[in-house]
Amino acid sequence: MKVGVDPALCEAHGECTAVLPAVFDLDDDEVLQIRDGELAPSEEAAAERAVASCPMGALRLSR
Image (cartoon, rainbow, N blue to C red; front, side, top):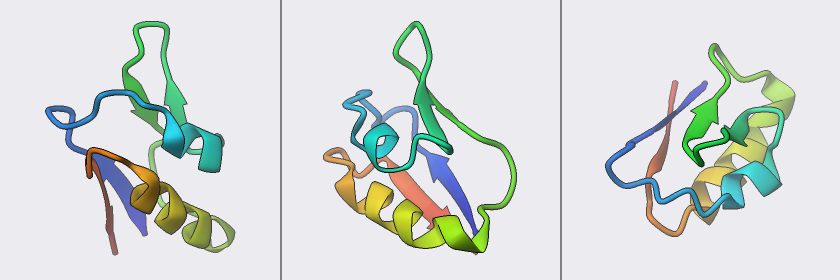
């Protein structure tokens, strides 16, 4: 499973970073950075919560 972001929708609220900081981070310019690669199986439930927490609906999961 991978996570992605639509940068046109992301407003850097940071809810995803609070849920899963090992995968999501806001850089110095408050642009969302997502760790490259597949999520570990142990991160998938938290990633689903992070995607659901986005108030702009900017995040998505893919298998």
